[in-house]
Image 1 (cartoon, helix red, strand yellow):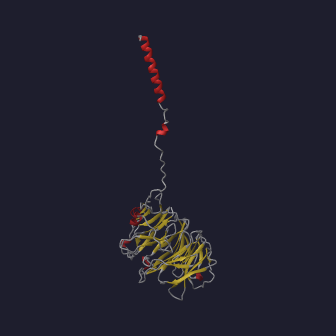
Image 2: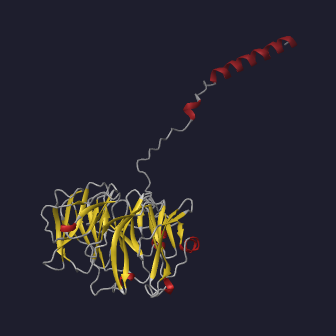
Image 3: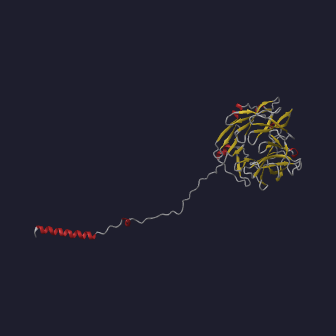
Length: 410
């Protein structure tokens, strides 16, 4: 075979081989067919998560007197700030001579009363002594944000005045008192502007009843007295107006009263000649009309009383304690334990309170504050009626060791 014929035969053989090879190659399989099947996992159960325990936030601020300072305390953290320092006030206003006095017999924290809006404070200091080493008191109105102060005028022959702030803080009223040789006695009611101006004699104190309550509008006071002498005494020296209450006798004595937070109602207690050691509590409109009896109970007649409305106006707490005014010379202690009463205004019913815990005020959300009578002291907060404890942050419990002055809403 010639060389050309051999080369031609080789090409023909290669062509046939390639053609067969092409026919034997399978078409490519789509890539998706070579992947493993997709697995979809559906979670039907949410893993258990244990919530972190927390104490609900408490509203407002606690105003507290620790003996040295008046503090404003955040109830949630226990963090406090000093509103007033007695050391600084004594330096700025007057030296406190209570430690030298026969009245007290030892140094005692001088009285501080904040105005309703907490912008001012009434400071009462034993600033001088008489020949018998009894305290002569001076009163000062101190403005917190500026540090300025004014000294209130003292009525003639008075040793002091039991001043109380008016609802708007623009005025003060109170019963002046003095001594007749060794005998303590209250003199008369006075009113004065918070800048010390316009000291007005209002009315004589009758039957030694020095307590009173401001009317909601702030224009008049109501000295506690027998019904035959019960009246509205006006701060601007207008003629007093007699107040009559249907269903009460002239010899019934008003022991304490307070107007509701909205000023629409008034709750008050009455004591009578017979039976002794018994008290009746009434509710009326703020003008003393439509009086109805809420409840009655036995009570030691030596107790002074105070009416404390709950902020939601559903409850009235009646606080009882012996007279602790050192200037009277009376023994401020008694043989009976303190008795508090809690009244549901809507149902006119008495509610149970812990026997061993004296109540001393309300929280802004209408729970009762109780003082723990233990060596270390402290407070508890309970819901009225059920006495369910309200958990308090540790910071507050460790700081507030006795009843606060108030639990302010802001």
